[in-house]
Image (cartoon, rainbow, N blue to C red; front, side):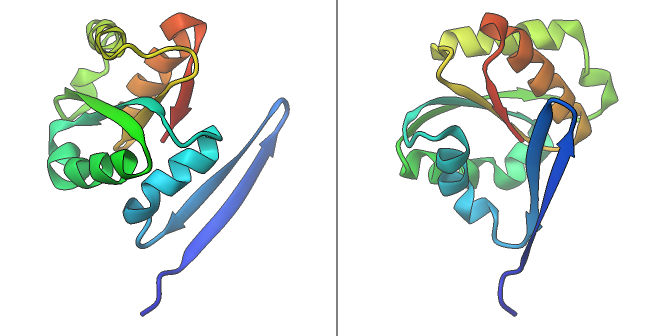
Length: 133
């Protein structure tokens, strides 16, 4: 069966973004990140939980490095209990240790808790840096 993707464009007041759903997307994450960020290099920190990262993290790191990104990661424990200000603080410390600048990005690899925590941390780090989920 061929890979199929569905692209949905959401437009709301002041914001528009695309959601892509399909198979085979992890192997194209590097190309997607480059296109989304409009750059093929720079630094990214992957934020994930230990379960999801154990399943997909090495693969995503590899494809991001393959297009020129300097990649590091920050992991939290799975579950709602990880959505804390302490973990936001730890994430921002990881961003700082990685040397993220305003031109760099955070990549959330996971579901709701990971996306919420990574998005919030990216939104307040250096008054906001780019965020991919």
